[in-house]
Image (cartoon, rainbow, N blue to C red; front, side, top):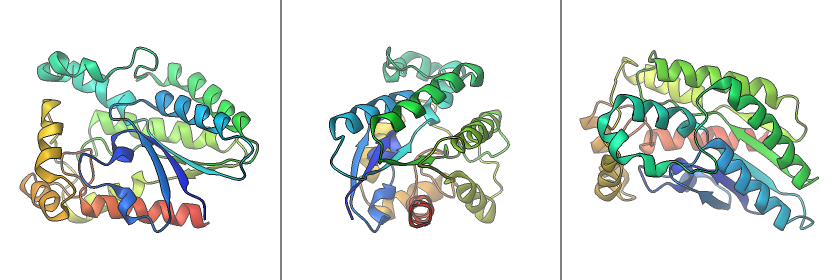
Length: 240
């Protein structure tokens, strides 16, 4: 089996928290950028497909979109994000929090992905929970964005929707109240967590437990339990 191309944001990078890639039973070629938007990941994936056109059938997984909603929210609600988090925004592919503006970009780039290779199979991943308060306005916006992407993904050939969000939500409900509001109020905390945890599953689990989090270390990036849930559902989707 040839390596599956993974394009996405910090979850694809796997530096913060535990990388879901370590639980995938097949080779992967990861191209993640922390803080990247859905459009940013898609544009880079299009370039890759164009450069490798003609080398045979490929599977490309696009796991992105959280930062379109998360970064604008954090900038608006947390002073330290407003002070220190703007460097995460790319001037070429900035976050698009408005669904009406996002949809035409999504549709255009999905078609460009398919046009870049006539053999590529696209695995389009849902946006994971944004904090473990499942009733928050941020998670309501995420569910709406996911449903919009899922609905329109049906109209594209060679495209499969991978719902990694619902099983994560279920896991949160199984082991907690689903009302934990924790999110890092300072972007510097992300680097502190990454240095503290490294790739150590035990440290990630301890950090999550200390914050009363079920599937993440910080409301966003997975702990071992969350990473395994993501990987299990990616495997099930790719195998179907």
